[in-house]
Length: 355
Ligand code: IPM
Ligand code: MN
Image 1: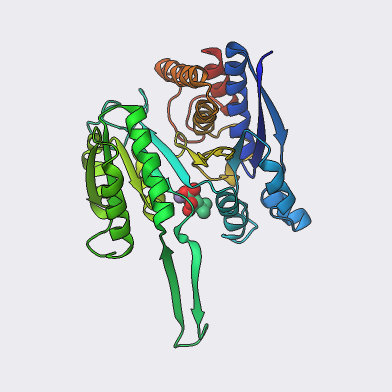
Image 2: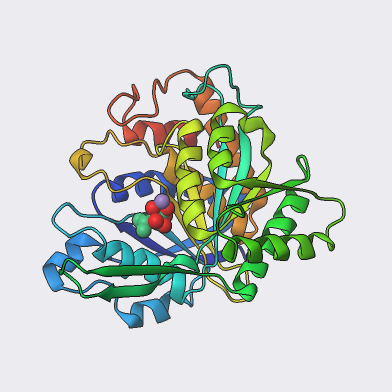
C-alpha cells in the first residue's frame, strides 16, 4: 500500500488559492511519480470568512490541525480587514499554539532568475535562515500607560528564554551539519546594544557549539548582516537569529533570490508529533485576484519543502530539478505578477510537466 499523508490545505485570501492550486498540481505530480498519496482536507480561513461570519480561527480547528501530517497555506490578508487582526488571529496564533518554533527560510538564487545584486550568480546566493518563531518581540509582552494622553507610555518587551533559544540554536546546528555545504553557522544578533537578550543568545550559541566541533561558528551583528547580504551573500551558509531580526533579514534575503514570487518558508515544530506549516512568503496580493497572473513558484517551493519535511526527499528534489528545467527554457520572463510571459497555471503546467 502507498503511504498516505494528510495535509490541511488553507488557500486563504486574494491570490492565495490560485498560487496554492499550482503548488498542489506540482506536488500531486511528484506524489504520483513516487507512489505516495496526498490526502488534502480544505479549510476555509482568512478575511472572507471573517467578514462573513466574524470567525477568525476556532479553537476546535486548531485541535483538528494536530491530527494532520502537515499544513499547506496560501496567503492571509484582506483589504477590508484592519491590519493585524488576521495576522495575529491566524498566522501568529498557529505558530504559538502549535509551537512551530522554527521559521525556516531557504534563500537560493535559481538560474535565469534576476537578482538586483550586480555580478552575483546562483553559486553566490545559497543559504538558509533559521528564525526563532515563538518568542522575542512577537509574544506581545508590554502595554500602554496613560494611553491617548500626552504622557502616554508604550512598552514592548523581547522575551527570550534559555529553553526557547537553545532549541532553536540546536536545530540550526543540526541543519548546518545535515546540509554540509560549508559547515558554517552564523549567529545574527545585536550584542553591542542588546546586552541581555543577545547576550543570552551568544552564550547559548557558544555552549551548544561544543557539541558540534565540526561546525565553524561565526557571529555578526544584525545591521552588518544586512550589509553583507547585499554585498557578500556568498559568505553565508546557515544563519540563526531571533524572531524580529529574522523577520527583517528574511525579507531582505527574499529580494536577493528574486523576490516574494520565489521565496517560501516553513513554520516548523520539529518535535515528535509536532505539526508544521508551509507557505509562500508573499501576501495575498488582492489586486491580482482571479487574473491568473500571480507567480506560483513560491507556493511550489513551499510544497517541495513540505514533501522534504514529510520524508519524501526524492520527490522534493525532483520538484526543485523541474523548477530549474522550467527556468532554463527561458519561457518565464520575470518573477513579477503580470510580467511573467506565462500565466499562473501555465507555469504550474510547465513545472509539473518536467516531473
Ligand atoms: C512573516 C510575516 C509575518 C511576521 C506577519 C504577517 C505577521 O511577515 O511570516 O514573516 O511578521 O512574522
Ligand atoms: Mn515577515
